[in-house]
Length: 110
Image (cartoon, rainbow, N blue to C red; front, top):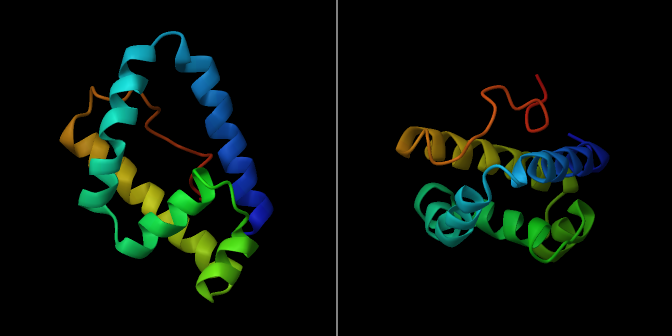
């Protein structure tokens, strides 16, 4: 997945949050509180580092790759797999916890 694809996916997620934010603000607030624990529980250390660098530090895939000495495609793939893993974990642990669509086209390249 190219860097632009991941940026488009991030933008789509932001739009989804904006659209759904009014209806489930309490759910999103709970999610923000438990998200660090969820990431620690279900993701590898590498997935956590890359995801936090991308979403919190707002680094590009290329910048993350340079920081950790890997190719940007490896960073993209790792973030993609980590997000899918976290999503599956949240859906399994508490399906009602997050109101998200079953098919996440913005996180999947199928």
